Image (tube, rainbow, N blue to C red; front, side, top):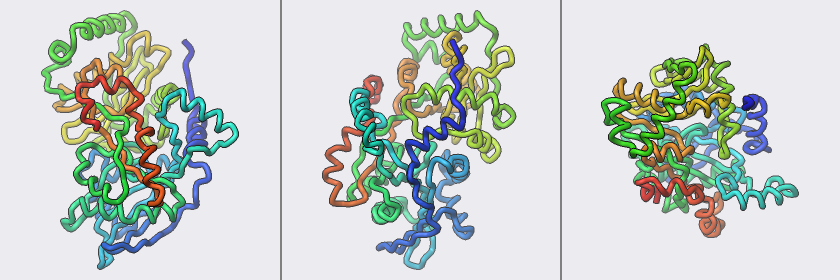
Length: 415
């Protein structure tokens, strides 16, 4: 098997072609009056509002530092902004990050439909690629920020819903999307329904409660007899080759030239791509978020063959991005070896939950993980188009085209 590589420049150019073509000039400042006061759109947070910015995400796994990392590392792929929500006294009560991207509406649609539309795009390259204002994070789940001064989060939701259509029109965006918000936010974001937004399911994350004393305990009590037998066979096969060892580090910088090509291989194989990470992203996690960033690194005869980029927060180990060397990954069942080692380490170190980013559902189903629903809230920037848009929006729901998702025991929670 030949090693598949994909250069950083090539990945970046591929994403630029799909996402930020004809990117508008970044605005310095845009002020929009509202019933609450006003909203100020800026490309950089004023120094006097930095405390409000930090407060808004202080309880989140991806806190304000994570957004700083992504905005800096992925600035060539997304136009990042901040919405300063001010009251009638012109005091900033909340800072909500958002970004603008040219979104391919075909992403996640059935293969037969995308193949037809790609032929049409031979003549109309921009067909169904819509400029979209997205509330949330370009490399992670969306989060509704907390307002300062004891103001309820529902105020943030209502305020955003009121001003975003006007912000979107100023930025020439046709769609407004709250991207990948956890199910726990549904009560707060229910306010959006009154302003023309409609909720659909995004590709869900998955989770596993780690209420086990060891990996063997998990193997014996959580998995089916067939899966246990299959895993033991895979582990025996992996053991026939050179030993595969795992180490845990909080900064991947010294090993980035080994790790990044493994991430590129995974990206190349993925059918669904939104963000494409950079070396700067992975290095900045350890350098700026060393208290939360965890990297698992697997080596065989000294050579890195796999790694996981994780965020640890309040007893939850959040597994965000992976890299594999596919010249050995399949032969030595690296995915399952890495899950065994990762689960063992997490249990030993007191984590109560393992949380995994979306996609790759087949092994997660057999490992008895459960879905953790993520939601999209969407509307057009022009109210008169909304009724027509809502008719087609369910067809854009990506979960309806993945039969594996329906087999999870809690699939009904997506509704």
